[in-house]
Image (cartoon, rainbow, N blue to C red; front, side, top):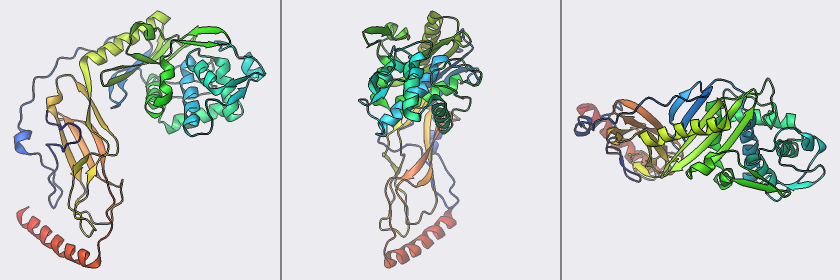
Length: 400
């Protein structure tokens, strides 16, 4: 495998010349890759739109009408739950805080958690009620608690949709009840789910719960795959007459996690079966590898005029790549590093790019950042480095 494993330097990297020409060592450039694994065409799914992506690398494996704006039904509650989790993470609310149930929340139609008007209900129970029981009453109750009403909460939902890059989503309510201006897409639902999984893992376990009991009423999670596939651990179902049956699901097998979305299927059973097709295809024909860990030193180039002579470079987050199975021998990596760096350099400052290729195709790019700060050296050190830099560039010009 031509890409190093975690915590090592790439075997293929840039050579820094005066013109910053990047070169790959000939021995590796001429290596013959192993035969490619044959991958069949993705399965055809009985839905209006569908989408499959890797949760770690973000690579899209399968998509169809992924940006079509469709009514999301109760998939809307993924954003409602996300905002509750965000407020919990920021310390603005706690799971033990209580919410007084308004008559408006109590009267909300559709699926219910069965909270009672004027009762005080813990945020913990409301969050479970939103995710597992798909409670419209619980969704309105938290919307009123967090934003003073459902309309301002919907505005907050849309602000966060923009922040998260959801380009085909608009919310008018917290429940998913039908509204002509409420829509989302399979891609946006997958992206939102990725944020839920990666940003708030301490709350994600709720999505795998099969039952929720409140006020002596026991309700099952509507995600049938939680019973059929032990690797599936979320996320949310949705249904209205207009939207049809939808399901956002996630599963983890070994070190690989996939997120799938189907929207507009014909039945509860259909959304489960079509989702299983997508997940099976992704796990069978692809694999995800953690190539570099956050903070791993990938190179230490010369820096001029600093209190140190070398600057440790790396990535500020784990680098994952999803590739067809048995093609990892075709992976190669290269560093494009800023030329002639001079102190001061701040920790976290971008100084180049890590480029990963699969054969001739670029499959990933990641910023290279300074893993430490380099301060200016003393006046004598700076003068000495100026002389050394001059001769270094002079020699480089002669032989370049």
